[in-house]
Image (tube, rainbow, N blue to C red; front, top):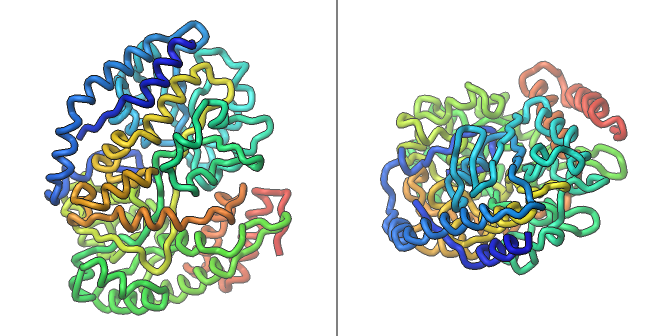
Length: 487
């Protein structure tokens, strides 16, 4: 094991690669937007790719050699638990030496990689983790979980688990220097109550307003991002534009698209001293959304549903969506030649308020018998400048690396065809610096989901008043979390 650890540690410092879209959303697509979208100014990106192409083969060969040098006290099977194929596509496309066998299996040297994908529907993914992680160390070596993925809304549940189910960065030998280019909020989300960081992400999911350029030109007279931002930099202005869009035959968006913007700008956590508290800014979302929905200026479509998805096409007549960089690729059907995305028809601005949405964190499971390989995967995928540049350029992702984003923002290598050649990285980097995680709690996923479900009934008229919808929320949340109280 020492021999292999020394080789992999050395490789983590010296191996780099850059070859020729992204996020943590609900889709499992990994098709490159640039293959379907019109050509933007990608000369610099192409030059960067060509310049580093020779190192790709060497990196893959050396990583394969190191992975093959597995001593007896490290396992021959690497088990990875996910809820979709996003991370799998990142490993397949970017981790040196990874060989795909089929949709659920791969190879890294002489190590078999097994992907177990359990969708998040009905909490199935978390239920699966809850059943296997606590006793992982006692499982058969070939069945032990080595890596599992978490999202922001429930990360703390696994960071604060007792006994621990995720190894700390210190235990793995990953240092603060290794993580020096990462955004602080991405560390805070996976830091336990004792200050130990127990996960790592390749993504920084600051987000913004994604607007239909043709609709902007038709209704607002311009699709220039700076000018459009000036017309949409407050919720009052957003409401003014919504009226104009309706008059022109467009719907602004779904009420569910704006929810995260409001909920990311609250003054306190969902749960305070064991009591569920509806923040004033979340109540403002209700009031604003109700007014817009009643006026026919916003719809109430469920995220990811068929009606909601119509806005990805010109005939859908939807002005905007809200989302981070992973939304570009995973949620806008960039691989469909008839979509707005495939024709470079979206623009990107901050909108009324800065916010973040989602992200995927890699955790090393307690009990893993492949700590060296897990560490190497974490370091390469989440700290290697060349690999992270490649992820940004190939997958349209916003990577968790301030130096890489600064470089991408400084020249045409950060231009995205899906955005009509716009470079979003300066805005995304600034947004990542502003993310404040001080109001997260272990209950965020359940509270967010149940509140939106209850309020949809209010927007659609199933509940006559806000108080009726709130009562339904209170009932649902106390059934889900019996230890909590409500008003």
